[in-house]
Amino acid sequence: MTNYTQIMFSVNLAQAKARLSEILDKAEEGQEVVITRRGKAVAQVSAISCPKKPVPLEKLAVFRDKISPQGRPSCETLRELRDESW
Image (cartoon, rainbow, N blue to C red):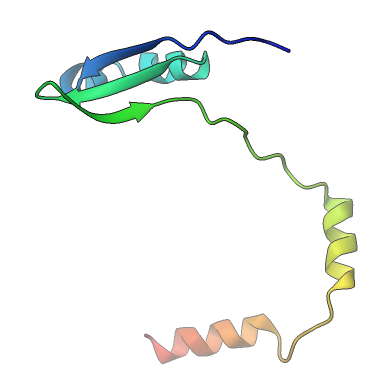
């Protein structure tokens, strides 16, 4: 198991705008970046803790086959809602 050392540093808003790619690289490495405005912390950039994994199509097909149809097709419902122009 990899142990990431979490280092936090802060940048002001102007620096964040100019160095966004670098800030995202740091976040991917496990570091947290605090963005400040007029010396006050307003945002934090950090890596997503657990990215979603795609569902295998075979499992999705099995799941879909287990679901019984409910009423009319969804495309009809969507067309009706679209045509009501709400």
